[in-house]
Amino acid sequence: MRKKQGILIISDGLGDRPIKALGGLTPLEYANTPNLDRLAKEGCTGNVYPIAPGIPVGTDVGHMEIFGCDSDMYYPGRGPLEALSGGMELMEGDVAFRGNFGTIDEEGIVIDRRAGRIQDGTKELARALSGMQLKDGTIVLVKELTQHRVAVVLRGKGLSAALVPTDVGTANEGAKLVVPHPEDPACKEAARTAENLWEFTRKAIDILKRHPVNQDRIRKGLLPANVIITRGPGQLRAIPSTAQKAGIRGLCIAGDVTVGGIARLVGFDYYFQASFTGGFTTDIMGKARKAAESLKEGYDWVIVHVKGTDLAGHDNQPLEKVRIIEEIDCMIGYLMDQIDKDNCYIAFTADHSTPCEARDHTGDGVPTMIWGWDVRRDKVEKAGETYFMEGALQSLRARDIFALQMDLMGFSKKRGA
Image 1 (tube, rainbow, N blue to C red):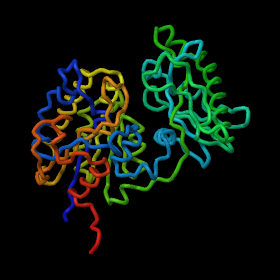
Image 2 (cartoon, rainbow, N blue to C red):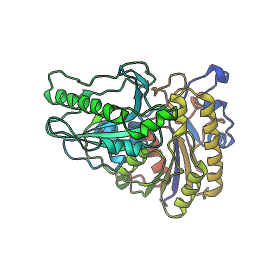
Image 3 (spheres, rainbow, N blue to C red):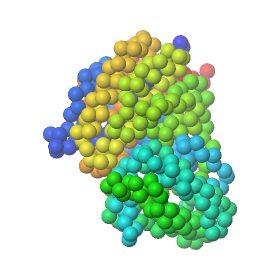
Image 4 (cartoon, helix red, strand yellow):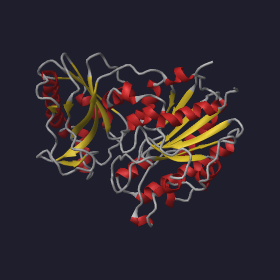
């Protein structure tokens, strides 16, 4: 079979539920999306589950599955993925955490888990903490990531990832910072790791509150990044190359370094530039132009990731989610004009649902489409979660969608003679 190309657009956290303020529609259904509607009318559609119905997943697990990797077998925890995506080198025995620069008061009450979505000065803050030595000799490594995000690594002997870190949880501002503790009180390694994490957290608070970056933020009336809030502990394990297994040359275009890091881990190239942010505003047409160029350069599969829809869901901003969806629609219109329609497929999906009123990831299916001139069409004519309940891709998993794309493109390997 002659090989073809494919583009996958990932609208992070796209899936939603009916919203009263939008007349009972979801943001995708409410938005003006002529190009997404065309994909729906001329392709096959459905609400796809990242791993299984009713199971919420994180961005990390969601993207591993989208990229064709079995997270049940190979997921190392979010912490190692964050650390690796930030360019940190992990050693056997390291325990890595995903973290945020956040804001707490004098009593340890969390005021803002993201320190006002701080963007500037995080490199200086991370440097002030990285290399800290704890009383038992454990070394702490800290690396800034996108915006408020940060990776923390504990490097020492006899550590365990089986502990509860300090994060109070999404949308739980007003609660007190969690004191780390082992999942099993009888696990000495986890108890020691929890003590180390708490020692680091307290020392970091003392350093951060006196740091010039935070003193300047306070003078400007901004929230100080005076704590690192941790979650997602894990230890590294080997992840097989999806690219090698499928025999494809893939490229991921994303402003979110975590997504780019996962793409690299499974064997794809990663492209980033400063205008490709992981925030509400990003050079979305620049991503589209890079995707079109990359197909001409010979990439088989090009992934374009947009983070803003997830952020809007977490912040309960349905109209902002609508705005970003309409920007994605314009990007898709541009791509449809640039590709060889006889030899390229366009797929559209999300890593998980982040309904605005839930403000967190849920186990709902995510709107998904595959378009191409020879794709089997269903009877759906408009983009939206409700409409896709009648689609041909209904209730499949993210890895099923990966397999379907690879088969359409001619990269699937036949079983049997």
